[in-house]
Length: 147
Image (cartoon, rainbow, N blue to C red):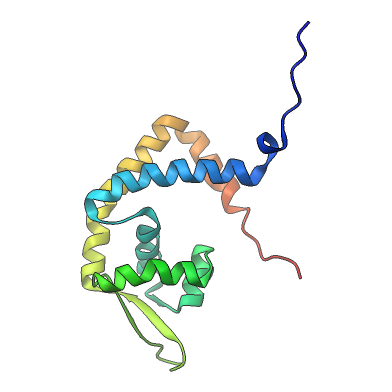
């Protein structure tokens, strides 16, 4: 009788499993979005800004579950390319407001069919029902940290 080895810490690590899956998915979406000149992280910023209308760096970071430095790193090339505009916040001149420009809305619209193809490829690979279950489970993970 063969005894199977106990799983290693690396095999049991939730963080590693999510990060590996995330890297694979990022590569999939990035390859589909490349013809539009966007990475998946930039697409996410544009899509969220379209929903929010405008947002400060902190608000966008919270909405995307990113740190502010990462948001700034993603916004900078979008601003350079004229896809977003960074203005002084209407109610607080110490804060900046990030808004989607007309060119940004056009790029986002052009990227949507590519994003849909990435979605379809992932669902074909993983299964539509399992993909929906995965989204539900993963959306339950981000929560404020205690203390």
